[in-house]
Image 1: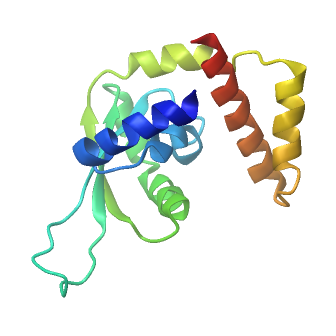
Image 2 (image 1 turned 45 degrees about the vertical axis):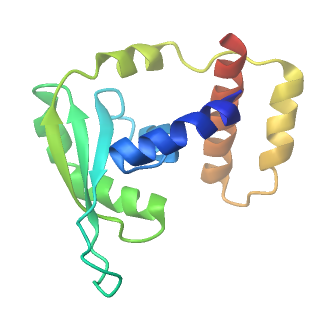
Length: 155
């Protein structure tokens, strides 16, 4: 189910926001636990290239942030920017622009935690991620898998 939704949404998000759906899915790890509930990536503004010979220039990530919390988020921008470029695997983003707007619906969804999944799905996820050596990455991938399967079954 998630794969089908991703196939439909990916081109729309790429065209309208200049980013991939993976960035939205991994935002909680990129923003960190302190900021994930009240921030959301909106779009990436990529500089125009006049031709194929123009050198690559990194983009600007626009992040929506709830009201006064923008000041708190701004203090962490260098760490978030570093995690963001690690996520992409190269210096994709040069800076982050904060826009103040409500992000309440994201926080409301996070309070419910991960949706429950059956034992067969849980063991399937564990079998898939068992080859990952990095423990933190393995746990994050397993959590992502539980979230994707749980949400797909709920809808």
